[in-house]
Image (cartoon, rainbow, N blue to C red; front, side):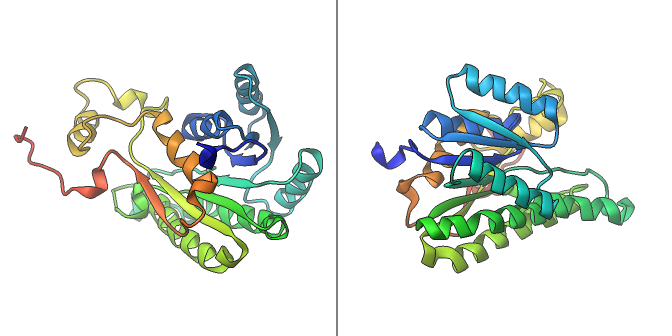
Length: 261
């Protein structure tokens, strides 16, 4: 089990204050990592840190927008000065704007691309030199099934996540020689506070997801913990440029007729 031990490692998780980001951060902490959490919302950050500390984990937090290149650079320098080197980066911060492509304002499209794609590039670039100096590191980009599939009303999000998939592969290609592994996680549909309103019995989308997923259920946030620990640990030292889809099997199947048991 030492292959999965993260004791002595420091993990920077962007947007790790709620939902899947918090579940992954808690997974890393349970394996021994020290957490550094970022957010743009002070109240959420404070609540998240109270939760982590209450669980007995070592955690610190910083307020900044990952798309603000200058501020992000200042904050990363401060993190490394205050807390120490960043061994693991999880690019989790993201937004979604649900609107049909024909109606979407270009400014909204650009904002989604900026947060979901440019932000991970900025953060990866800011931590990589330190990782090179230390002889290695782990970067984990949180992609999506929309890195592979299209769907109505999520054009900007899908474009960003598709781009993030290719950013992952290109950074892995460039930085592998430095013993840096850059991989991605593509979550499926998960039971979070955001999806609670559509996860009720009888809701059409709830029935669709359960029927479309071979596992026959929504994912639980803790289902992501094992994958993020694996990609952050020595057990994945020869895994590079891969996207691991944690989706209950959705991408493996064409689906089934509604009357098939």
